[in-house]
Image (tube, rainbow, N blue to C red; front, side, top):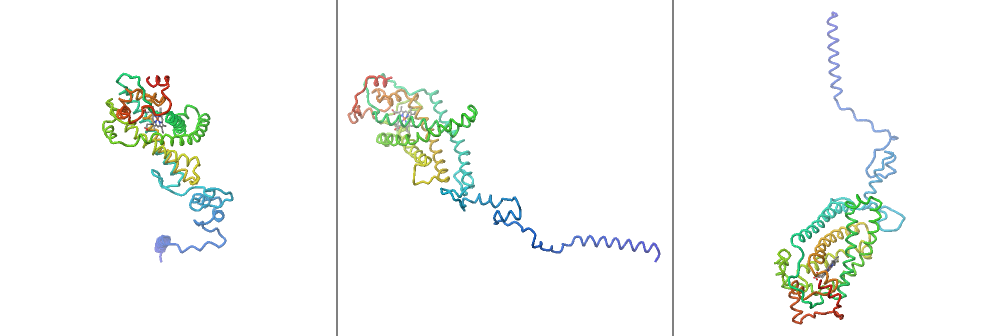
Length: 375
Ligand code: HEM
């Protein structure tokens, strides 16, 4: 073999070896040997924190998984008490929330529904009465006062009403500061002052609640009879009570608007608010103060009170500046016959016909009070 022939053969062998080597490299590797018995074990999902510490020191995933699942499998604690071994609640879905741990679900309902929509409803109600006052002004009595007085509210009715009203205002103001104060008071007062104010109002709220509850029951008993529906209510409602055209539509002692306020605002929402409030105050022994029960009571309380406050913005407007003579009636107890005839004509007719006494309480009209009522 010549030198040239030898070189060509060597080159060919090299190319062949390279190509073979590439093919070999693409072949799957033979199975690896099992790890030596003394080496660390792979982490398992159901192992304890101590076991995990051997395979992955510092990895506390099993511990935190246990914390999150403590809602379904409470852990052991030596302190007695409700939910002591349960750090995080079970998964739930409250109306309006995602399916998540109950504490987070409650937070979502509060922050995404109750606060924004409840706050907007209150502002809308406030705007509506301001617009009504600007556009229509107060309801007035066209006829001249007669000087003859009718007892509209007895001392007991007035006392129950005003105790209830004062408690309501205290509850409403303190509730609004607790729920919405961080948006409009915190930036003005700063966190220290706002914290103290909210703390004080929260305690006031807890004590005014039972006062409101008791006086609400007396108000319901005192006013239920004259708030029972009658066939004339439909006619009153059909004419919008004259609220928008100024007409005086006949009604009995309470018109259909007042009856709606009584049944919707005082009876239903009042009792729901009081019931849920007493649960939150932990005054209902049958309902354990667990976080879940508190969350449900809180959401019901928040929704009912916001609706109630929106309704009562309308009531307070009509009872103060919206209808002339109404406030004096609740303050002094008496109305002029002209007022009674124009605002509650069917009630006035019953009094004139002797079917209802013009004076129901034992006391006669005190002269000073009657003068106040005429104003
Ligand atoms: C500052 C707050 C309040 C003011 C200024 C106020 C004012 C008045 C006035 C002037 C009347 C007489 C209306 C008429 O002669 O027909 C009245 C009636 C009445 N108020 Fe109030 N009120 C207030 C709060 C409340 C509260 C908190 C409640 C109950 C939760 C309430 C329940 C009633 C009831 C039941 C009546 C009888 C009329 C009806 O049954 O609808 N009031 N209020």
